[in-house]
Amino acid sequence: MKYFQRIRIEWMTIILAAVFLIQNLILDERFGFVPVLSISLLAFLGLLVGFLGNTITVAVFSMMVMSTGAFLLYYTPIIMPRLEKIYLIIVIPIFAVLGLIAKNSVLFNQRTNTFQPRMRHYLTTLDETTGLYNVY
Image (cartoon, rainbow, N blue to C red; front, side, top):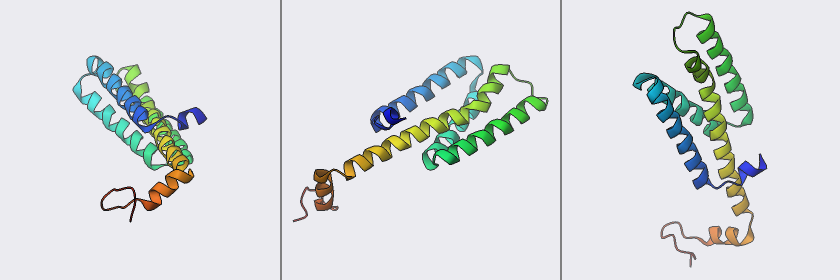
């Protein structure tokens, strides 16, 4: 997990966008527009939970989603391909974990920059209105 914290936010955004794009490209050929749209919304919900939550929140939410999804998709008569059922169950936890890793990476970089004396001096003497280096 320490390695994931050191990834820069630009790379993490590129990784998230690539995973999302690959998911949509693979699923669009296999299922069609409407299931891909619903899976994309579920992925966005997972990212939102990952960005706004902490580790405990993501773990509890993922367990609730997976248990509820498994119950609804396997014990009620819903006719859909087996792989789509499995993916619908795990899409939210996957993207929630990716969002949590991205958020922790940003917070780690923020904490690292804040505690460096030179960066702290730069941030305290920065003029908010003009963006110039020195307030004076």
